[in-house]
Amino acid sequence: MYLFIAPWLIGFLVFALYPILSSLYYSFTDYDIIHPPKYVGLANYQEMFHNDLFWKSVVVTLRYTFISVPIQLLLALGFALLLNQKIPFRGFFRTAMYFPSMVSGVAMSLLWYWIFNPSIGLFNYVLSWFGISGPSWLMSPDYALYALMIMSFWTAGSGMILFLAGLQGVPSSLVEAAKLDGAGRFRIFLNVTLPMISPVLLFQLIMGVIDSFQVFTQAYVMTQGGPNYSTWFYVYNLYTSAFKEYRAGYSSALAWVLLIVVMLFTGLIMKFSNRYVHYEGGGRK
Amino acid sequence: MSTIPAAGPNASSSLTKPRRKIDAVSIASFIALVVTTFLMLLPLFFMVSTSLKSKKELLKFPPTFLPETWQWSNYKDIFETLNFGQMYANSLIIGILTVVGTLLSSALAAYGFARYRGKGSNLWFMLMLSTMMLPYPAIMIPQFILFSKLNWIDTFLPLIVPAFFGSAYNIFLLRQFFSTLPDELFDAGRIDGCSEFRMWRQIALPLSGPALATVAIFAFIYSWNDLLTPVLYLSSSDKFTLPVGMSSFTSSRFRIPPWHLLMVASVLAMLPIVTLFAIAQKRFVEGIVLTGIK
Image (cartoon, rainbow over all chains, first blue to last red):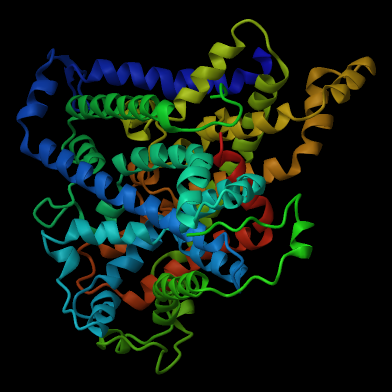
């Protein structure tokens, strides 16, 4: 066995375990990557709590997570429910909804950079159909973060595919039985469908939260963290302090806080979900 | 909000059922679908249409739906002005090598995890799963320092070499698949005096086409779209990958970004992914399903 897992094992030690541990060590040092690290104790962690940009990045990231992840999940679930019906052109709709998810990262950021352009972009033009005169989006400190949230809804199609798969796993006998008992559509959804797809929901919730804690591309390509730090995401902050200000020690402390928060969040969601998530066959994790 | 079950094991009951009547809910959901699909496709439509517009037409508001003059030369210009061909080639090379590395190492490790249950194998497996939750930014600084000590900065090595050591997500996916292969196959191989390595190569791998294809696609898409890693490691412009090169468009170098060329780049960047999706659509969706439900 060890012969087979050797490549992974070496990779794990060199590219995961060693970096985690040395990152922990660096987080207690003053380190500019060129000169050897100098031990400073908890100074980096103390500085973090007094650093405005750190708090700014925490607030931006949490706001983004708490607003955009739930809406993304609702949209994805909504689309999946709509497309799980017998509806004309179902195949076309599924592909069309998924298509935007294939334009990811930088290309998507560039496209939406143009869409949100207040003078020539598409977004305010579409809004004008409804008599709304839109704000200047990415150039406005009040709206830039919302613009990025709106962009994130565009890729709800990838979540939709997962929900569709989950919905197809709901045994039709259960739905039929509920119908015979006189349950309406809404009750069937609430008492049969939702519990059956709760593992998919949980998986997507965890992945969504972890991903949105790590937003980088949008901030790097579209806003550079601005205007006025309104899109100063946590990982963008981490990247700037490490690779623009050459403060690897302080950045490592940021990285460790991120690691701990991600683990806490995952653990919390898992624990909380034990009460609500239904797994077929009971005990299986 | 209804979930009408697809014709399944009890499809026979539909013989006696009257034709499904068209009710208000299905009409409303059809309209909702048409509207949202229109809104979802609108940006894509403009991506393609803008890529064919002339520089003058870009500044029109409201934007024109179709180009007034179809400027196909945009697609030629991008290769001449922006080092685009080089960037494209770089991304392809890195992507393909990443796929090779991921397939080899992940398939090996997955086989190890699937076929052996010895002392400690569970512990390693749990460790491997936990690395799936590990955020890349948490380890990127020490990795950067490590690679800079190896003098690998401004080479493709930091982007390719880690792939040859496997990635948890793909190992997990393949392990799930290998575990479903019947033991009898391997017992027969063992009786015939097959070595473990040969069984991996001649029994496990040939039977795993769909799973391997899924892993290959995932690995390629991930590498193709990644921005953070190449931004850290690549500094000279002839080594840029597509995402790095494209992101430099929005920097201050261009006061007004050349939107038409940006959209050309976006369309071309999307091309390999769409092609892969079109070729392997069914397997791809199956693969997503496979990893989606743990």
